[in-house]
Amino acid sequence: MIDLPESGGTGALAAALRAGHFAATAEIGPPRGANAEVVRRKAALLAGHVDAANITDNPSGFIRLSSLAGCVIAQAGGVEAVVQLTCRDRNRIALQSDLIGAGALGIPNVLLLTGDHPRFGDHPDAKPVFDLDGVQLTWTARELRDEGRLLSGRELTARPRWLIGAVENPFAPPREFRARRLGKKVAVGAQFVQTQFVFDVAGFADWMKQVRDLGLHERCGILAGVGPLRSLRALQHVSNDVPGVYVPDDVGRRLRAVPEDRIADAGVDLCVETIQQIREIPGVAGVHVMAFGYERGIPEILERAGVGPRTRVSAVAGRGDEHAR
Image 1 (cartoon, rainbow, N blue to C red):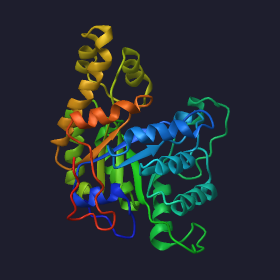
Image 2 (image 1 turned 90 degrees about the vertical axis):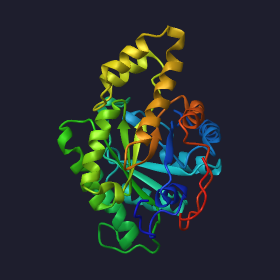
Image 3 (image 1 turned 120 degrees about the horizontal axis):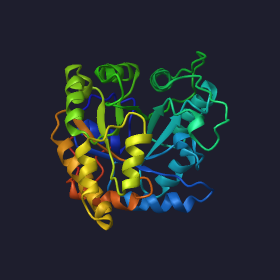
Image 4 (image 1 turned 180 degrees about the vertical axis):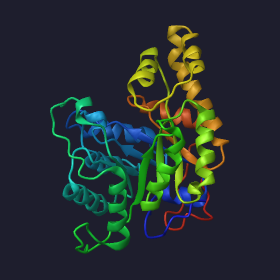
C-alpha cells in the first residue's frame, strides 16, 4: 500500500495504489490531426486492461493532438486518463491554467515533466519556455490542490483533486544520484512515478534497493516503464536515440538471433518476461507500458504477464475491495 492523502487522487489508479494492487498504466499516442476517432479506438483497446492511460504531450517536440483533448476523448471511451504537461511549451500561467482545467474536466491524474528541447522535434526553431522545471511544476500542482493557492498567492475558488505523477530515469548518469533525485520529486508532492524503459532488470533492482533504503516506495507508487521492441530498427532507436535508456547486450543478441519474421513476437515475449521479473522486485507498485503504435498488443502483454484484466477498485477508499486480475 502507498500512503496517499485522501485530498488527492480519486480515480482507479489512486485506488489501486492505496490498496496495494499491482497497477498497470499505458500510453495512448494521439494523432497528428483533428481525429478523435484515433484516440477513441485506442481507448477501447485498453478499457478493462489498465488502471489509467497517459495521453502524451507532443512527445519529443513533435506536434500531436493535445493531451488535454485526448484525455477527454479517452475518458468518454471508458479509460481513466492521465494528462501530461511539459514545461517546454508553457510558462507558469499556462501550466497552472491547464492544471486547473484538467481538474474541472474530471481528469483524475496528472503527469508533470520538464520536457525535451524543441530542437529534437518537428519545429526545431520553436522558442523553448522552461519557465519552470518538472520539480517546480510538481510543487506547484501540490500547492494548487492542497493549499488552493496559485503561485501568485491568490486563492482558487475550487481545488482540483488529481493524483500527482512524475517521471524518472533510473539509468541516466550519474546513476548513484537517481534515487535521491526521485526523493526531491516525492518531497514536493509526487505520488506516483513512471520510469523510462527498463530492459536491464538487474540494474533496475539495484535502483529500487536505493529507493527502498530512502523509504520512497512507501510514499510514491513506482511504475516501471516497459515496452516491446518489435523490430531491429526499434532496438537501434531505443539503444542510440533515447537518452538514458540502457539495453544490455544480451537483449540485442536475443532479438538478432531469431528470423526476421519472428522478431516482433520475440520482442513481445521479452516484454512479458520483463514484467514478470519486475513484479518480483520489492517495492515496485506496477508497470507503465509504452507501445506507441502497438496499443492493440498491450492487453495481451499484460494478461500473459499476469497483470490483467482488471476491475475497478473503490475510488473513494481503495481498501478492502476486490481488484481482479
